[in-house]
Length: 413
Image (cartoon, rainbow, N blue to C red; front, side):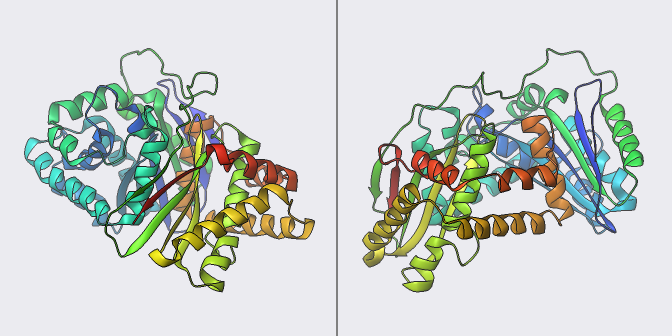
């Protein structure tokens, strides 16, 4: 892997990998939390409307630019970044890279196209309302972070999206899409030196002669303000057939490396994707009380969120909540045996290794790491850090994250 930074401030990373397909991504440190002074949901709406026209291309041309070559163009928004990415045959890599930079620097936001896309985004918001499992988690984070920028819903609201105009989108991009908060990553089966030259050529083409600007600093642990620490236990009657519940609280941030890895391992044991997770085994496999149960962990710059999310019949809610709390107490009081700890580490390391086989996952992960840390850890470094975790580290994580005086619950009936 080669990592570098150009004179305009854009950082980049290239890695040899994949076969016929190549992957590139432009990650921008600008998400929902950066919407102060704008209507809620503008980051996500910007991501949608970048594709609706540039100074050089109409929306239809953009849509066909890579697809007619068998490639894919996509994007997503989180609370802390917007990412535009593409998958193409490696011989079309230059076309894909050019398109990503064109979308980020020359989007025009035509009024007619914006009106059409506004309807699409509003339908997306309404579809979440029809998905209680998604809606309850969004409401959980909003309440947990109340009064903090992280409380903002990624999609915005129907009312806020209706107010977003083309001029506001242009102003948002002009203020937020700056070279010093951009990262370009690339994975292809080509020599890394050749890939680096292509990246430098691309960046030079799109940012040559860009005016000097005051540098924006990234999120740093010393700069950030922690949320107030809201705690709540609430039930809302949604008149749903299934009950959806979220139980959780604050967790380690991106910048607490050891604690973050311990939280990842704890969450994977307690409610990871495998059917042998503790809560999956008890609530679903053994008792049949739920269709699904999972533990989600999302680290942000200054803090994180870990939550148990489940859906069940109303008659099973109390026993499900009791079982969750019982298992949490076990992790807080009984350290894992050496054999169980070894097995848990191997499972997590296996999942990470399999995920890393995907060139697209590699490309996106490289961008996230470079944006957040200014570096990319090797697989050996990650493995060593996970192997170094102790049973006491997991117990400490369980006590911190699921402390009774910090635990919140939201139930949709």
